[in-house]
Image 1: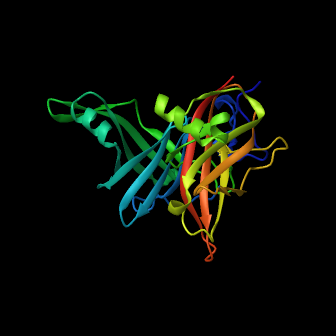
Image 2 (image 1 turned 90 degrees about the vertical axis):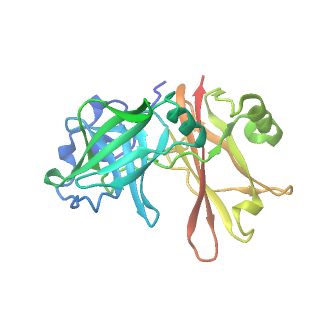
Length: 294
């Protein structure tokens, strides 16, 4: 079976299976926002000779804490980069956890860095990716080819995910039984990735209700498969599915009928939300698993 999917009325062909199937960027609307060093927030996708590549994309965010980027650089892994605004560009450097930082500082691993420069002439960003290493106690940069062009996501296009994973996700028996799920973590340090493909896969995670928030609030989830909206067998998006509060103080975020009849490597994501009396839907976390369906 095909291991990818399509969406109707897809702008720029973002959901096409390979680059050859993606229409020209020229089909995008003629109007585009002004791009400047102070205004690069939003979602961007790589443009390779007027064809967009959905596996290379990022989201730039600004807050009181600074500038960050959620970066997808091929595959399904999302990385967080921290930005420093300079004279003509923003330097984004991959954020490392403590173990990664220790290995990097010892010269045992690398990190990524992106130099992102606005290009107002065609409403795009010019991005130069480098690999950073530590040599003789100092950082050294190695350029990974020339610059790449990124264009802004169309406002009416299909939604793709950018948020890094915060929680593990379980399949099959481990999705139904918390003890089985914990046994996988104790044995492997992570959930089992292998599962049989099919139209009704059980997918789930657990949280403590006291950590989620007020019990009077409602808790639901949106599903994403291979970084786009998950569909049921009739092609409908799986959005706003309720979570279940258990008697033992846990909340079970269970989907018993995830439609995934596609072989190969696939990415399951569950975006978890809380909505209280103020009506604001707050993102609590993103559970994910890159699985191998056979």
